[in-house]
Length: 479
Image (cartoon, rainbow, N blue to C red; front, side, top):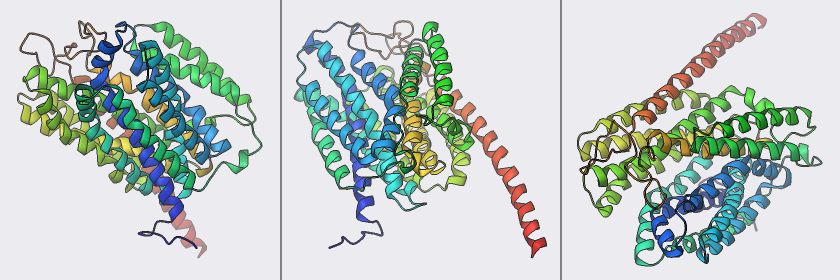
């Protein structure tokens, strides 16, 4: 017997939506809950300070670099299949992380977890896009991302509480049931794939060169002075373009980069994501180091902007495709202004209020980068498009931390982790004389991104209106 729709949503769409929501929640929870536990990890495993950052970097490099290939694999071999595989791999590797006897073992398990995360997001987005009726995918995706955004709210607090009251290993065990639920719901969704490429094998040359480009780019963004990584990214990029032009079934259709709304939304989303990383780092650091707040008080205050970020997905899902670029420009402009106010704040109240305002705009912008790009590409290659977008967002995320000045001039603590006393000049100095991280450059980046997005919006909307006017005139003449 068929299952009736609930609130107008068919069961296959519900299962795909649940799988994406829980999968994204699982990935977000793992990322946000782990950061507070890292000092405890190092103390327990007695690892080298040089190895500890790789617990995070190894995951991000694997996830960011493999997402384009993962998205195309989903299009070729089935989005449901790849989402299920990613969830199983993520859960198994999380269990291995929880059982890690040494720090190098933990890093290796985190790399495997990054591979699972690379499969979850592109495959989940493409699965829901293709399960939804035409024109409804962005709202369904927005709601799923909104549910996943709850991890932004509870992740840091859960991670800190578990690390101190139980064990850092509990942080990883926490994600295992969510990964299992993702796989279970994914298996109940309808399978979909790119039927036009059913007989086409994966473009191996494109996959290798794209992965190499993203790895080099990520390493360069982490160490901007290392120009060897930039040169490597440029050379591999040239090889990637050559491979895609020659491939009968390219991993990434280069026409995707001629899709101006797609490119604009992806680039602007990267700016918003980098600014979000900066805000999530600066706010708790400033409250604790600049104003002397305790960890609990800072965590409670942090919940307001974190909740504001979480509502961005559902709001972005209600933006029609034609308005996505103008709304993105407005969000970046609002975020840039609010970040500047937050950075220049002379009291904690203004800092928290301005940060919450910035988080509202950044949450909508981040949601638009995913819902908007899916709406302006062909459904059959939704996995490919989401893989490219998510990889750009992931690889450039570390740039947000660098823009705050974290790690410059003594910002790295004895444990090898970035400390809250990185160079910066907009927020101020700590009571002990250390320099707090700055929101100046993230604010400027958002404002510049807003200008460029607005220019694209004007350049595409105005000619479209003229063309529409001419079309109406021709139709009236023929009538």
